[in-house]
Length: 49
Picture 1 (cartoon, rainbow, N blue to C red):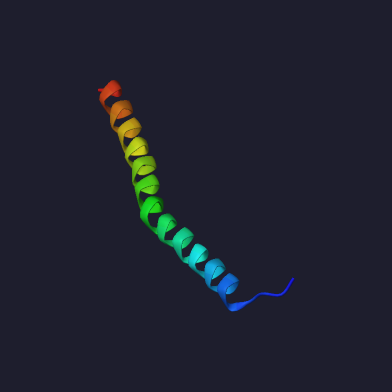
Picture 2: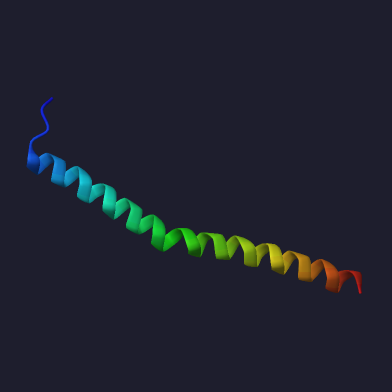
């Protein structure tokens, strides 16, 4: 399958869009996981007291 310039541009732009979306949502996902861990640790400490 030959890759003409238009097809190459579409593939590259899709790759850039995927990286952009990952860059947007990856920090949000990481922060929610960390906050869940923090909340569980805080609730365990409160329950022990």
